[in-house]
Length: 435
Image 1 (cartoon, rainbow, N blue to C red):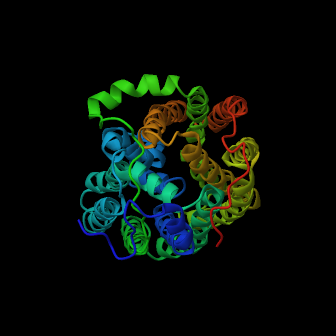
Image 2 (image 1 turned 120 degrees about the horizontal axis):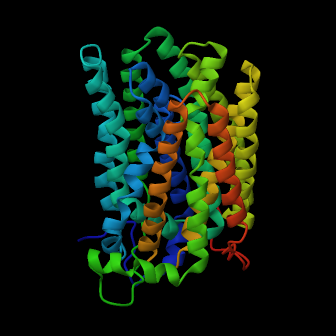
Image 3 (image 1 turned 90 degrees about the vertical axis):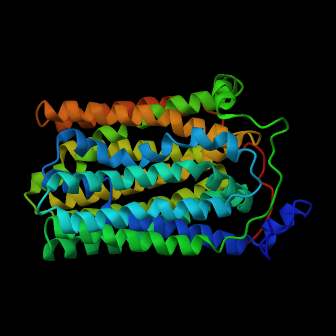
């Protein structure tokens, strides 16, 4: 296979290649991710989708599940391809291929909802739920390859800021998406508006793939020093890999408890809408407030993460989320709920920056794809469990205070455990490149 003109061969100086292409790759990673995440704001899993499901007559269990469907899809899949990705020397071609199939479900869902919902709401609900699930599953097949590509093209002292910039761009787009949600659902309430919002998402995702294709990838031999593993061998090796990295095992437990936020998230926007007696177009206002807070969270997380690592950022986000959840129980005015969604956006996105940074830096280079896949896989059961708990508590009566209390308890336990995890960036960051 012939290398692309800008890709150097295995014998080239990879560090020089990374430094020379840092500006281009940094900008491409940031804009690609910003467009991708920002496009999803049109059908925000934490704000818009739960209300869509409720208004289409979906059951409580589906309302609680939709915020995690995308994550469930990709968290469970990396373990099946990690053994193969561990021995790859290039990732970009694979990522472009899977990227096409990753984006198609939103286009299909938009068309199905537009043309079928009025005659068969069940099919529309299925399309709405399957779009993030299938997209996430396809993404998961190559997710650790993307993480490897980012680690190879962005030095460690730039990773938190590139994650933060991705999310900040997404949030700027998300503010526009919030205005679009409000306008579209005001003009086309119900299924027609839901279909149009899915098509807006599909368009943004396609543009993001075009930006991603401009990344320049170095060719570096894979780090594994022994014969390649099969899927079965890789799965059997998981316990030994975890025992060899006790700090990572503790981090996984902290992440499991942090998934308790999904006990609260599905009903946060529903709570605001119902408490104030607002129409579904009010979701647009909440999305804009959430994205405004997320911009602030990303900027601070990028600054702190580049200098001190991801752990400090994660701890800050946990404290803010716990405070926001407690306030949400008492809130009764529009100004309060807007402020709550600002704090929600701040904490949620700051946590993503911190976790994305720490995930890569905690994992040893050898078998990094497998370690990243383990993190993804072990996150999935607790994320699903949180939605089950949320559905059971909510279905037993509108017990929002109980839901918020359980979420706060989980976050505080996670915070206590995370405090004992060693920050991997203990040495001074090497000056591997300047923008």
